[in-house]
Amino acid sequence: MRIIGGKYRGKKLISPTTEGVRPTSDRAREAVFNILYSRLPEDWSAYRLLELFGGSGAFGLEAMSRGVSKICMVDKDLSTINKNVALFPQEKDRIKLIKADACNLPTAKEKYNLYFSDAPYSQGLSEKALSEAQSKGWLEKGAVCVVEVKKDETFTPPLGFELKDERIYGIAKILILENNNS
Image 1: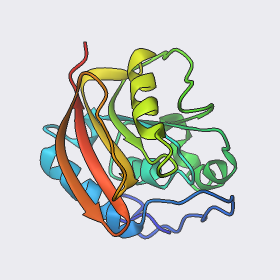
Image 2: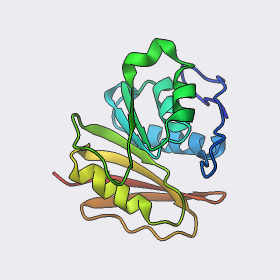
Image 3: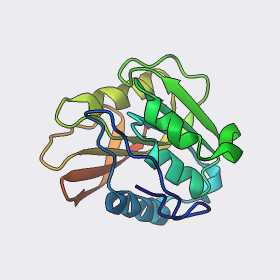
């Protein structure tokens, strides 16, 4: 596992040893960032990323490498994320970690305009987490939301989220949504 693009391109990350953690493949992560690059109207520095089910932190750290101004990663187990964040000591002011259940978030202290989640497959957690992020005030109106689910998993966008794109990479289905909630 490594950073694919940006300032830290090629930097190796620590792979998770925790059972049940399944990082987004390098190929799928690169594809998602290519899609985002073509869709996002502003430079990466205009975005703040909320990553739920952070796992290894690879997606958030990739976003940071590409210039996202701030990342907040949430997971119940921060052990692997902490190890990977420690590889970027010069970026500590741009990274926030929260140990929490993604489906039971605290009320937000700040809003994010970019969202990524890669919940455990086929457990119905993706919709719950996205709804929770919205209801607890974590997402700006117009936030671009990337949700990874298993390719044969049914995903129903929560009320106020519009599906903009859907792609399949191996066993993963990547959904791009927009938050139209105010």
